[in-house]
Length: 196
Image (cartoon, rainbow, N blue to C red; front, top):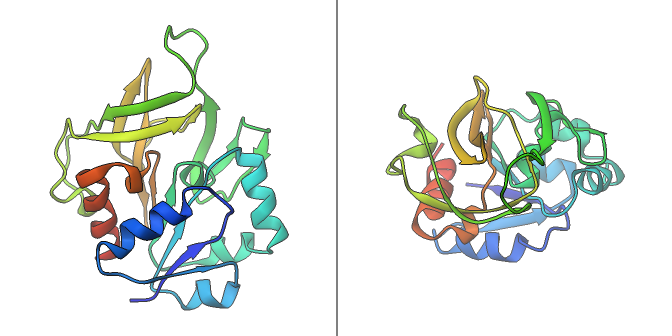
């Protein structure tokens, strides 16, 4: 296995690498397009604002490389949001690997924003990425923007409104929550992704 983690500058990268090491897998942190193309699996982590993360990918000349990947690609948190066509956060064009636009949580909900803490996964179909994860399992979220439910949604969560928590389309996967901070369930999701 040759796992590449895109160095998007997020503060969660060290925690993510430790979580992967606990699974017995080594990873390479990189912004080198050659390393990404040669990897068997690629993870796009993200923390902060979508516009800033996209700017870092553009500055590293990685946008076209990521769009052309055919191996399993997992976006985490903002990294998942970047998989969509666009985000209201900074009104930025994203990678366009998944249809739809990421939007801020509605100000009509009587809950604090950002959505921060443990919340449950909701799903009713089996999927390889969700192997050994069951509906109602808790995972850890930190986000103010969310992706809509769509055909690519394989698990949802609810915070005022329902939103996509785990997505998949062809070789593209995403987790809105932080698997590296989600204990057993997060470890299972990473294990399942790396087994693809």
